Image (cartoon, rainbow, N blue to C red; front, side, top):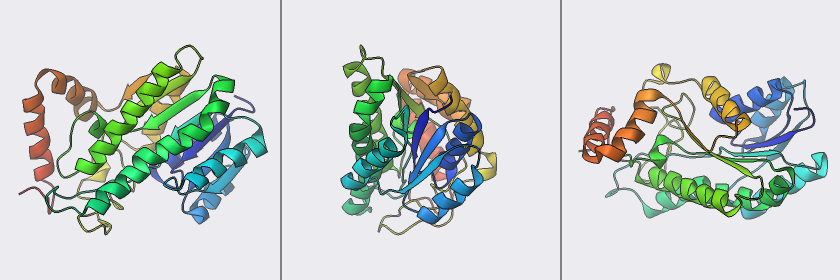
Length: 267
């Protein structure tokens, strides 16, 4: 893995931060990107065994995505892996949520992936590298009170699946990874109906898969050049499988699960 280079967006916390540590432990040089530069710098200081470039990046801004790729190539001369991990969630009934909230979620989750991918793709094709998108089980089944979130993750899956087919003869590897519920900050910063941050998670984080375990699975998925990775059994693989066979049954189960959350928007 010596001299191989991985870009990780949304690396300041959660799965992104865990991925940075996982790839550093395997000897990869890192480019870590997020809006919170101070947290990136803290992470950089803790990863002393490899070269690390921290780039303040808002993936909703096209010029930031272009600059991220340009700075990577300027420093390292190559890109072997791009992990589109930056993401934001929302929690509100569709009848109450402001349209701008749905637009903001799509801008981060979908357009952030599209923009980073577009500028990194020529370099990934050169190295026959890996393009990775972190979606969610919500990218396979619709989640109530998360309509904008699920829509964005469905969109990412469709985009990356299309890129895979388009470049099937080029040697490019494309992985769409869908973690189940994973302990991270995403629920803390989820947007409510008016666009304010949720603040407190409505779910028991201690019962979720850790970000570190999730990162290990994703690392292995990239190494094995898998095309699809669905994590956790009941909330992940089983839900996706059963949704294909008994869609209404899964809809009912998901509705009841989310309706039981404290202060659920579901009436």
